[in-house]
Image: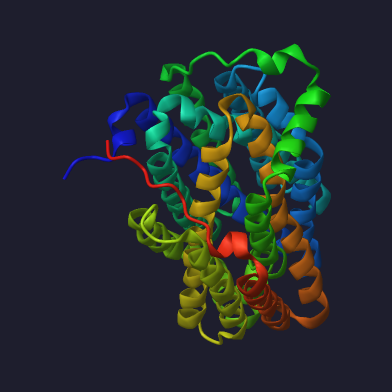
Length: 407
């Protein structure tokens, strides 16, 4: 069986490997942040503030990060931001080991790490089209997405193990090593020079161009809207520590399993969607995945034993992977190379800001009503939204991702 075309590119394979390893550290550290905050405060609301810190950095800095990704060497941007996040993780480890960690300092670390990511991720995504031919882009993103889910699977599980064995500092120190890997790998990856048009106007003009382009794409806006409904109202991450500790009584190890379970489902979802791209209509798949996401969120909230909670959490990941792969492909295929950084950064305000604000939303509701009620009520919203778009959203219903050419 022939390898997918992107895997025959040395530059793509090197880059792909480095991204997966650094994502393992990043995802594990985020889950360690959530558990650490709950340890420090015992409050789901304050745990949800981690999402607010993320959202502030994403909303304020993402447009600037995208503009720079279209103006400056994208490889150097990623390396610089990886260095900044490495220093933050060193600080987290030192503060934790010395017993000096405070909730405010933990929130500051999340703010700084997310600020670095707002510059890192648009540049990181925009590098990919420079490593593979245009005809292989759908395949490349269909490989990148499940790889991200592998990181989401391993990272939280690793965090649960390291927290149980060594405390949160064990995960923070592991994150330091993961950042070093991508910094070194990028020294061996060649990225062609960028088109010069973006540098001929101001940064503010670049940012405005990104917003204008996206605003004129009704289909992409509707796909993003469906994603926002899931992430704002089905945000499970902020309540996982409370579910593991107070509802299921499974501790840090069980928390790690719950945090990793969505990635198991996401891998299955990516495997399902990969052969379907270009062969079946993507719109009905997105709508079904959105409604099923709500069902799984309700199931996670109502689960009384770890086994059923893991099944529901895996279902959340499967549904998320189905519509994420389609959405990412739609954005990258339709966007000109000279604007990819700006469009990707504008898009990530929703794709990453939604989960961040969702953590605050569901964390706050859980603080008032408990985690079970918060997930049960929130899960109903994606079901209603998917039904409404199925009836009235003609663009989404009829959407099809262009078929890729064989390599």
